[in-house]
Image (cartoon, rainbow, N blue to C red; front, side, top):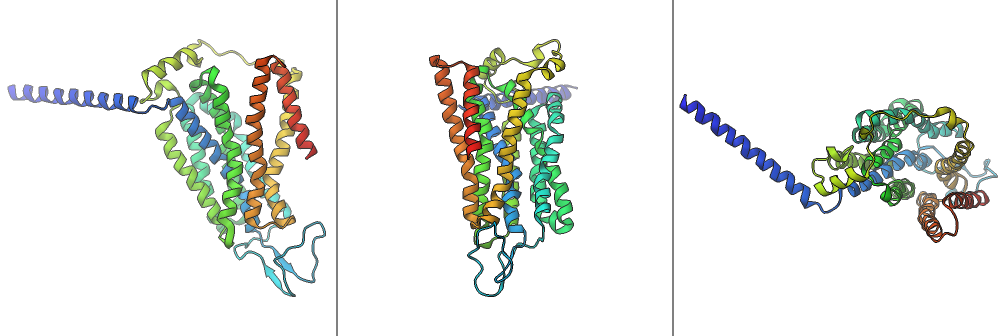
Length: 382
């Protein structure tokens, strides 16, 4: 009997020592990282959106090396396209040995648009899932699925051709759909109102960084006649690595983060408005929203903006390669330049707008209208 008591007492002591040890490790992890967890979230979210856009547009430049281009001297040439320097002598030349698909322009357009069919279907669903289950896994698993689909693209093409590729692109879009509503929801939990300007610029700037890096890196990967499959392997693997870091470093809310410092947690709980502090949710005034002229003005403006932006994202690589006859490296470089300029101007005019508002030169409303008009006017003129 005494031996049992001694054994039980010893086991209790061991458990207590282990708990103290775990607390010590936890305290060490909380104090060892000097970077606030909300900044880690923003950095990881930025890289997440970067991966979202690289996987989204990877096909746009890869397709220029997937489709068979056959030129015959003395035959018919497109009068609307620049002459190619690759065709010399009276012979037929296949410009790329890895280009094995005979897709017409309609088929190519169908494949490039497939992503957005899926992307549009999971926007509202993503918002619901984030509210119910949190942003960490809703966003993470969505991007994980897209990374797997990206890695499978070469295999799916060989097995099922363009039909299976279209289905795969739709699934990729569905996986990325919850990202934007999910990150917006997580920002409301992690970022104090007075810091949301700089954090928004950091996080959503990842999209334009992706638009810059994907064509640029794709052009480098595809130079010297390399296989187009490397593009999908590279960007799919990058997103897979991001998912691992995301699951380890990021959590849906500050109160669920095991390694957040007490000072940061207390600060966020004081200044961030949390939905669980409310006893009930406000009803959405759908009739007032639908009858609001500013709402429709914003909708029309956003549709026009996205129409031009995504047309450029989707078609500029093909136009540069097929019509202007740039090589693949130059095509990648030129395709990324508009988004580099867009990123630069967003920070520049954001700073000018905030400065003018602070000095009293114009109101917030006037500033938003003015700089939006300037941007749209320059886009139309170009």
